Image (cartoon, rainbow, N blue to C red; front, side):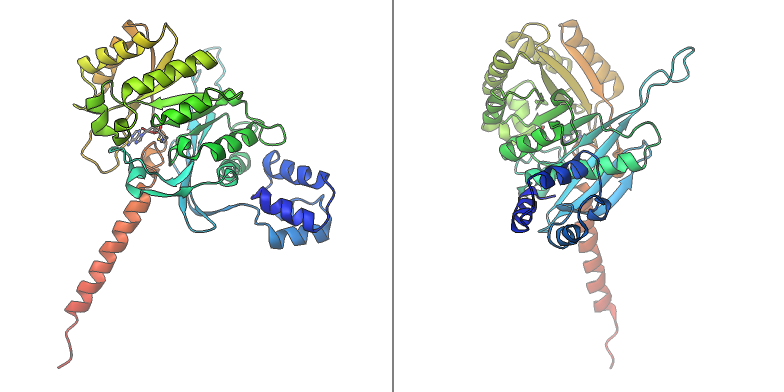
Length: 380
Ligand code: SAH
């Protein structure tokens, strides 16, 4: 819900101050989905709000469920910009083991900060869309609320909460810094979902001004840095942004962030066969990260490549194991991120792939139609 529009309407209607809080709590804390569910509001006011304040800033364009229990929503802003959000379901251990209860699965909401993205990373589908526009704080929060409502209504396992939020959908969060931070404050607030800040992560391409600004924030969100290569030459080929902020500059920003916050930084490293996954790369990465920090400064997330119609191929399991062993022997903690929702193109870097596919289909259909027209025999 666009709270600025709500404020204007409440003011026009000379409503008492507590109304806003009542409405915000119903929408953001109790996850109500429509004005008709706010039965404690005076009927006349409810009718007015229904007519003048859309309950969500987003409309659902497509809803897909993955075989792994994840859900992807494709949505449109009021002015027609597409974006996607994914609810990822992670099974946890304990299944079938004697004397151990199965732990309930965890749910992570992956949200977009922009429609499209201006940074054409070569392996990512969103970059191919180019930038549509920044999303507002309300549009970011509404993605979460859409997922939270689905989580609550279809909850097969527990009370229906979402455990974590990652700003890893479409877009570069630090190109939309103020709106992203405002949305995070809302997700964190006790009148809203009340999600602890340490359960919220911002993932950046390495936009240095954003890292330095985040370092000064009071709020304890996690920082993830998409590094993907340990030297400028290789990183430059994968991520054009490396020209603007080369690795030495990035490491300087990381040192500053660490000094300010004492929090560790999560390094995202996509494993691409024959591109950045050699033994040399692993040693170089270990050296780079260990040269900056004492133990515990960085945690490395190795990421499986999700196909996006490029020539890249993901590294084999054996290569990933070898790579992570080298990092761990050097004292770095690592994990290998299991992709979610791949079968519905809801995994990292695949967002927007369906938009591209839809466009391709449209082009093909058009071509087929014009061909068909040409083939219609003209009457003599
Ligand atoms: N712009 C931000 C957040 C969006 S992408 C950033 O770059 O961090 C979230 C993560 O998914 C990033 O680490 C990104 O590099 C990674 N990613 C992009 N394309 C991918 C792909 N095809 N397979 C796996 N991960 C991918």
